[in-house]
Image (cartoon, rainbow, N blue to C red):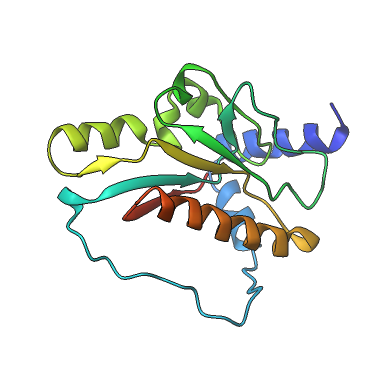
Length: 172
């Protein structure tokens, strides 16, 4: 493992263990806009109890059989992984060095609440759950932003084709 990856993992663990360190790191974050276009929000037209819900996460979770996200590129990896809602928790891994995911490895619902949404479907609070969901790696920057935007639009089209009414984005 490279020194850069080791350093990122140590910072993520330290931020989890030392009170206030994560707040100090977050204070240094400068949000940037990469587009002068408005975000294409779509109004909710269906009650939650009738809606099909899909999940998109930036936690770096994916099936073990899928290629890991590229953690060697300092600008991140703008690609996505298609996730089976039916089998993901049976064979998942998390490829992401910028947060401590030990708890998520024990209970992946922390980063992708599939079981909680299934409970809501069973209780009649949510209409249905999409069979496929999508995983990205957070921490994408620089030259990869245009690709990330294109990939996000592609995932949006796939979700629309799956007749998903609402998408829950779960960052890590």
